[in-house]
Length: 308
Ligand code: HEC
Image (cartoon, rainbow, N blue to C red; front, side, top):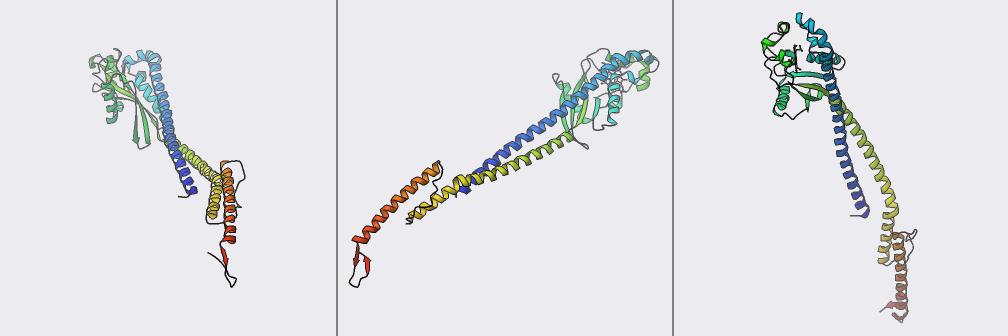
């Protein structure tokens, strides 16, 4: 394999390996970044849900306590307030969703779907699990779900969700006795689940990735061309010329011109040394020629010259 081919092969291999490493790393980093960003959004939305719940408990519920005795108002229920608040948000951002998914809900709209029930089971089986993220394919593209367990920690909850007999009459009138009862203390009854679209940031990450790889590939191509020109001019061309001249000298050429001894680098030194050797070789060859001319040439009678 020629020196230039070897050099190109080596350079291309190094650049391709670098490009591959950069591609894999940047893909992982960009996608992790996109997912982290979505988790951050989801966490903020979850906090908003919790804040809405807190506000309802602290400020709305006491205001409607008397009213609830006559007519039950769901607006005094934290879960209802948080869900309604998010439904209003969804009018402009339908891709975001908040649900208090429950296995045995008071309001049927809160009933957990199959995959939500799986999340609730996870929380039921693992008490240490405080939150969970799940990515699912939906008709709206990839979606990230952030979930937190709903555990009954307060005896007060069981007034309305424990035994039917304890529940306020007005509430029973509105919701009926079929669902939302029989919950127990410390039981995980459901999960708050926030869903945030993942496809948008992932698409953005893919676009950034493609742009980055195009820029790096372009830079590598430029680097390849520049290195090729420079290395060819500084090293390869001079080595090839020296090599060709040495071969010519080897084949009997006595003219020692053409060696590139310019510069102060190793190749120039090598050319100089070879030029020197060539000159010596020429001198010896010349002497040998001369000696052959005088001693070994015989002249025959007819005047023809020839070597013995
Ligand atoms: C005054 C009665 C009352 C009390 C007390 C009460 N809830 Fe509820 N809860 C309801 C009603 C009514 C709903 C249904 C609201 C709706 O229509 O969305 C509900 C809904 C929920 C939901 C959504 C699932 C479902 O059943 O539809 C969860 C979760 C929940 N409550 C948890 C709790 C917890 C935890 C506590 C205690 C901190 C609590 N509730 C206290 C009346 C009550």
